[in-house]
Image (tube, rainbow, N blue to C red; front, side):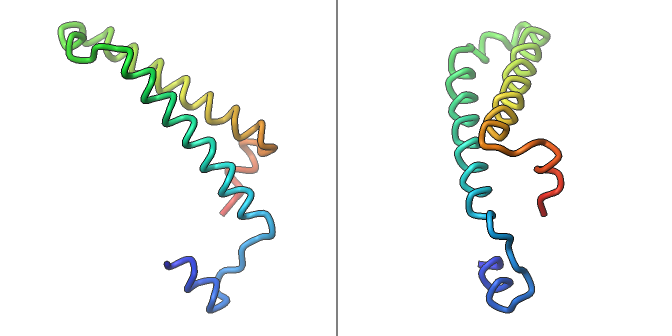
Length: 88
């Protein structure tokens, strides 16, 4: 809603490719969330309470692969990490 008000009043003027960018971020986020859901459902987190280091290891592996997967998808859509950091 704030975005619509800012556009309507002329305070914010989006670039011509912002819809494509939002679509790419939405698709990449959805696929990454699905990966996190599937991979974490394969691990018995309750049983791993007895082994905290193994639990931290698997959590770190899932988060690490999620970040790499997200960045790979954004790269496939034609954006680089530098481009993502410069988008406002």
